[in-house]
Image 1 (cartoon, rainbow, N blue to C red):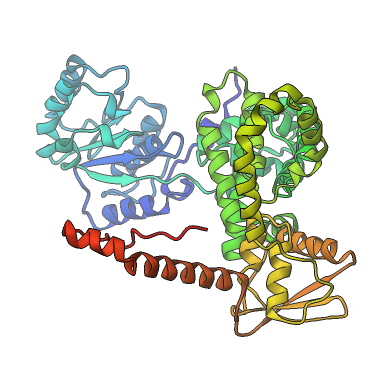
Image 2 (cartoon, rainbow, N blue to C red; image 1 turned 180 degrees about the vertical axis):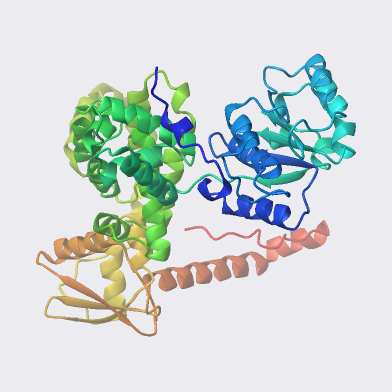
Length: 537
């Protein structure tokens, strides 16, 4: 086979071609230029970010024959560069520590250290997946790492540096390779596709770059697969089928219904998604990503996506974080669920169940009535329990009489009438918290003006609409609401807090002023614990 996979064909041959690791290449280049080459390195990072490649490039830089001293950019034409590239150099030892991890393999490798380089200046030893070495191998390597000959350089490449013994780490210069950003990776793929003369669209390479999760090798492998799948071309629709992803517009629509508490339409949107035969785990992963974007938009206003902006306006910050926690928790347990589809459905149900705007329950009134009729108690049972409950019912009736039920009003002209209106409205906890902080200013020509002390007081759009709807229902006509800046006085929350404080003060006064209690305390030398007196509603 003459075809060479993209990951090998476009493997960097010098530091300038390495993608997304400028902090590493600069450090190595400066070390070579200043003749301050360290004796041992640890290259750590996730798969496919360039650990082994950097080791090979460094070996070429140290042994390139284009100059009498090591160079920062190898020529790739001399015998030494060619031999290292083809893996036949006598001065470059690359060993897979995952398969050759025992003491015998290590002894054989270390036996070559005293020998001078055959053709170059340095003998470079690259141990790939070094964390897989046995304890005996590490012990054998330890002394050579500490005091190697001047012509020897060790490079330990690993995805798990924490598994290396501390004694090894302390003798090496550790360089941590980063995952490559999506934009950098997309530009890199674009350059390769143009070199290969392959047609593509921007969405295709963005999808591949995102799926690679920061790994250059994974991105090139996926692109190889995508080119074969698309018969030599990259199209977004084919990439989505290949990766099991879907258009985010479907997820955005579903999330919008979840935020509104509309369970029926949320699951209808999910049904549309299911028709595309997607990977449910990827759907949940993308859903987490969308909620993350909404969270950033609420905090930083950093997106140009109008859909994300609209969803951000419709959701409360606390509820947004709650949705994120539910989604992440579901994702962490996704593989433990026997059915991936059911795992996603349960996640959506949880999001709806914890939605403070309970629109999902508005259509259940009739069901409750039917359920009540179905569970109607037997008249014989009523007769038996009537005597027992008679006294309790009488007591309950008296308690209900003591509690004054707010009466409907036709307009609002004072703080007291605003409090009466607010207490009469059926609102979700979020709406009650938001509007409970506001005080009354005026109500004229169906236009209600409330006051906030915060000039940037923002209320989610769906919460604001819920309040307007509740007010309009109360007055049986369309009402508009405006929030002005000013001093908040006697807001519902302030009013309720004052009532609670008065109740608490009265309860403490009643207890501390009770002569019987005082006699009891004096008799037994007792005292009342601070903050232990609680008022009863």
